[in-house]
Image 1 (cartoon, rainbow, N blue to C red):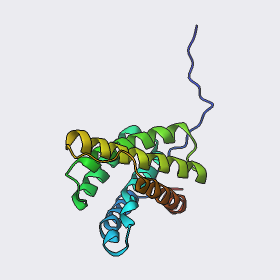
Image 2: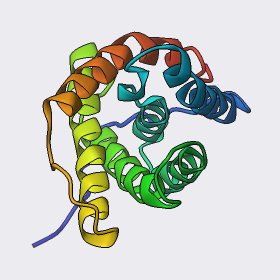
Image 3: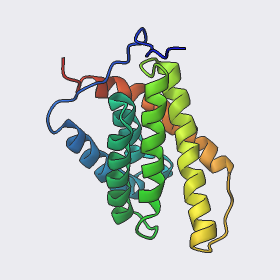
Length: 171
């Protein structure tokens, strides 16, 4: 019995222009901090989540997804009302999951981008709710209609924003 590697499946790993990930992350964090002050219900959008999901799925590398998620989460903690580390833990898990999903399915289609973003938004919210409930002893709902609307809005924004991020790829 011989074991051979399956080489017929080709997975494209994307490279991005220098500084594009940092610039996208900085813009997302700035908008996440200031939009809720001027636009009602803008806190439902998770712009750092979108940056984490897109670049983690594109690179298809679990380590870079973990590191990007951790960095984005810690910076988001700095501008949010939650204790330091809550978004860091949640986005680290999201970054890993996004890289894992990006490695296994084609995420360049609009429907797959919508579905993955929708599920990862809910995954992030569930991780945050579990952290708040069990580590911070702040009981709250594990799911709400507010989160459902937020995940629909964020996933819809991903369908329009990810093609703009595609322009940051190296040719």
